[in-house]
Image (tube, rainbow, N blue to C red; front, side, top):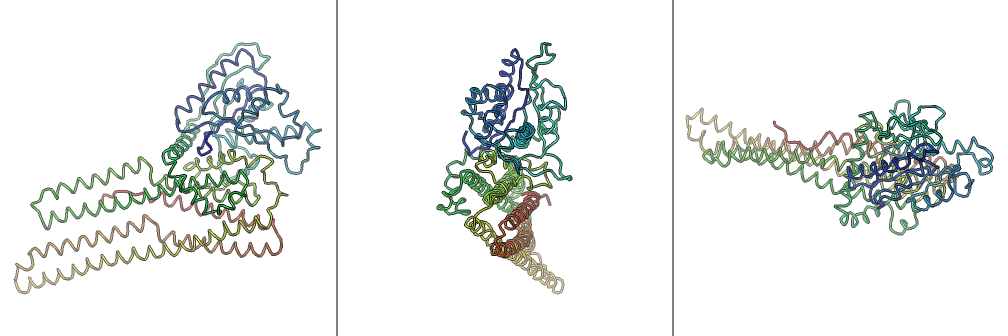
Length: 574
């Protein structure tokens, strides 16, 4: 699988003992299911998460490894070298080893906090706790769940337990427990009916049972469409992205420091750069659309005023008015259809969330940015949180060799790197852009005032001319061609002032300037606090500071995204 693409992640759960007569049918149904997803989202590969237990897990994993476009990620319950004889859960050891070797990713979860290897070996309860953690991990990091299951809803069934976690939400390793005010993150379940190994009774239904909830299917479809769009743009603009990604990565780390990063961090850096370049591309596209729309509005009014006051006999001027107005509406329709502005916002949101996530991992924090980002609009931008979770799986950051445990504190050199590459850089960015947007807002106001002043001056002059006509009865002066020129200047001055104000409103210079000023102050406060904690050697205090700073950065960017989504370019009819 090309790691530049975002795969749709599907997890599997099911019985460990399957009726042999049902296995060929389920294999065929799995192939058809995977093929249907790849046909529906042709730019998007699939990634199957499997615990690789006997029965359903290995059956789905075997099908996945035999299909092009589908890769396998194996999630194992504890570190390699610890109770290896128990990881296959009583299944065929050779089959387990074969599928594990074919996997694109193999993630061995770390032991629970406070547990050591010797505790695990002699405790079936602890082993079960670790296996349950795998089930929670699967449901938390997938967009859809395959249940190879007999359909019996029993609290004693581990398969039913995983299905409930996926439908109702659950906490998981490396994931924040849901707040009481948060709706659980759930997804659709596709049920592949199967009998347990010892069952002899025939099955009533053998067709795959789709997820009954239309809301879950709709949410899954939105995530899948956005993943597919991301991958399509990656393919289309690949060469352009590759050149720009070097620049974007340099924004965070110089090349000499990039090579020293761990593989998971380098992957996250690449994904940040990819999203950053896509955001830059669509930002320029959306800006061109906005300027073109404002230009068409100006030309439309100009043609009508010219026809009304300077050349009433020129029918072409009158015809040009609806033509240009229609062109503006067509451009707006195309912008909405292609989601140019929203794509820019979405990719910028993903890039900024990746920035925070990357530095959190560098700081040794377990948190995932997906658990804190855009919590106030979960139904609108679910795909960004899903993409962050997918990146966590692809990067391998959760493997015990890369996991960020409480006793793994960052060294002073890493802390200095975080201070310079994240905190200082962002403080300087927000301070610089506060001034930039303040100056741009001031410039727009001055241009608008200038056009209004011209319009007002023309109004005064024309009023004086009309008073002259009234006093001297010189109608030739009051209604000559110059009068029409003045009327045009009065009208166009107001139009240009309005366009300046519209540009100011769409670009949100004033609001951004205030927001950037607040963030610059926040980062400066964080820098001061960081230095104080570093002097005292309080590394855990620094981690807590970075955790809080990341949350504030995510909240600010979420507000920025939501506010900008309300300012999409449009062709107003007034």
